[in-house]
Image (cartoon, rainbow, N blue to C red; front, side, top):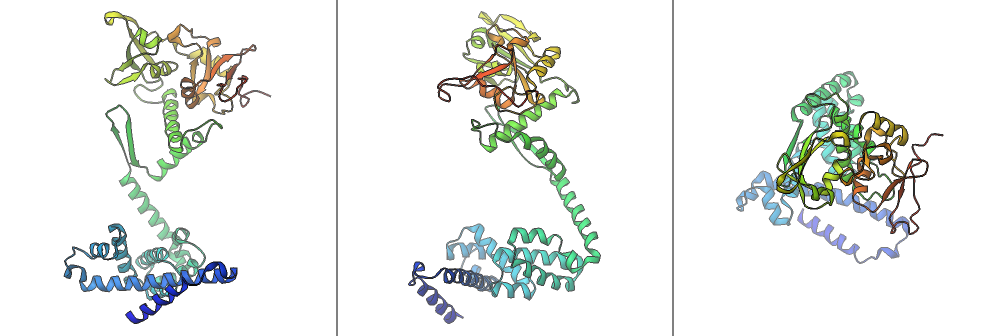
Length: 416
């Protein structure tokens, strides 16, 4: 064996002496195909060697704790790669001869072998060895046309081809087992960070995952050319919008039907001049600017403190844009009023054009509907919103975006 491998190595080394640029295109394609076949055949040889060395206990005899650790040092592999190499060698050794022959013949690659071996093992467990032998032939034929990912998908219905009489029952049993695993493994972990943020991790079952995607996918598309949010930031904002919508439905238990009520304590100067910080009733802090933004439409009970912590006003909720006023605002703006945004009213907050904390009143002439993203954007950008002569909102872009600062309007919500 070693002599044959040395000859093969010498032949491969000789290929480096032939510059590819000098070859015709069809020769280059043929050489690529031959190289790929050789690579798979060498993989079969390598896996066979790994399996034999593992079986002989060579690694432990040479002082290593396992074959994977020995391979890591011997071949300078990552330990994860080495471990998978040992596992695949064992899988290939236990697979039907047709799987090994396909890899040795160069007609399938290592990842396809992994899929074929796993699929054949499942077929044998559910339909017996005769069906498993048929599955090898079908899967090897498919491997000549499809990569490992597609091959895995096709393999889920392999019984339709090799054991059609039990395919439906087996598929139903597999689906029930999958749903049982999903129900068992489902969880969401909410970890509070020291700065008040939350880290979300978890696994959703198929039904919950479909519901989540249906809810947030329409909200994760960029809202315009000036939307610089990353995909992760858009998903974050979409989830926040869904939560705000749920709070408005009136169908949640306990405090459902009203936006979450928070007590925010700040100095009057801090709120009006956007200075300092504000304390939540949870003990965490927000910037004064964040409080001003949230105060537009969240049910925040302001406990504004003057000198000596004198309470000036608690619970002046008339600033909220609710009831008949919100309905009138929806009739006028029909959705987010920011130019180019198509978000409907249910995704929108009422925003005070002249902020309530600065003395602005809560009225139709001082309000505009904005989706969550554009509400935040307006509070943290140089865009200016105002009502035009016809009483409809218009937005003046910053000078860096439009030197002429020509007012823009939303045309998605206008009636024909």
